[in-house]
Length: 285
Ligand SMILES: Nc1nc2c(ncn2[C@@H]2O[C@H](COP(=O)(O)OP(=O)(O)OP(=O)(O)O)[C@@H](O)[C@H]2O)c(=O)[nH]1
Ligand SMILES: [Mg+2]
Image (cartoon, rainbow, N blue to C red; front, side):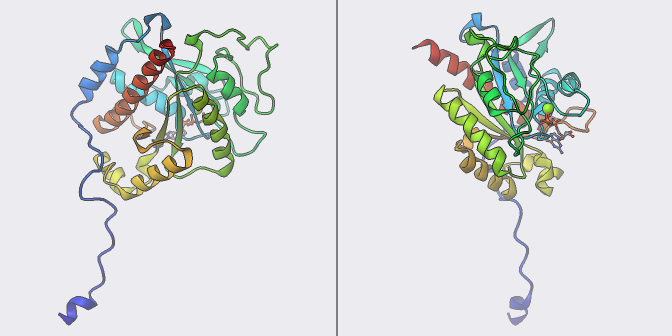
């Protein structure tokens, strides 16, 4: 007995015995089929517009590429290549459509310049708020110190519902956020909330946060580190846990992977349904 008590305590396990959120890892094909058959509550809309915002370099463009890759079954890198202006950062307001045969799916993602803690750097929150309301035309080049004003040609003074944002998605890596970015995100989220726009948070780079997740993505909802960070984001951003969506984007892979695809497809499915419901709600008014 005495020998037992002197034995060093086992290190705490980094994972729970059981996943706290259920994922069906076999349903990739069914999810792709559902997304390809997705129909708009208002067919005249053309497409749902989903806006991706967040600090620079956190995987917004990679998330768009991962969605395209998961749906098409082949690696796509268009979001980075199209938006790259030479410095490696997205600077242009762009819409990324998802090709389906000769047509495209009825939801699109808008990728914008990243947010930075410094007041004079990164996308200006006033520009993001203009985008929420449909006032900024595609191709606009962000100016961190001077948000777009009404007299400029990129300003759309009479946006239609289809030009507006139907779901706001913030993206950030698992490692936390600076106070400056949090402040900017809060300003943007408050505006989105007042417009009734549904909101999600995509937590990227989960492969870098937990060895067990890096080893096997199926451990995502067993990892204590991942759950803790999701709870932190939920509290900081005022978003329910059910709207915090962890993903591993493609970044150096050459082939798609079932588990990464399932997480990305789960996220997209929730996002597009919320955007579609938002349109329906607006039309009941
Ligand atoms: N390990 C890992 N790396 C990732 C992941 N997502 C993105 N990256 C890498 O992170 C870097 C930044 O990704 P981007 O998608 O360009 O980030 P962004 O948010 O669009 O950046 P800006 O356009 O500068 O605001 C790239 O080197 C990606 O390969 C991920 O889930 N895991
Ligand atoms: Mg980008």
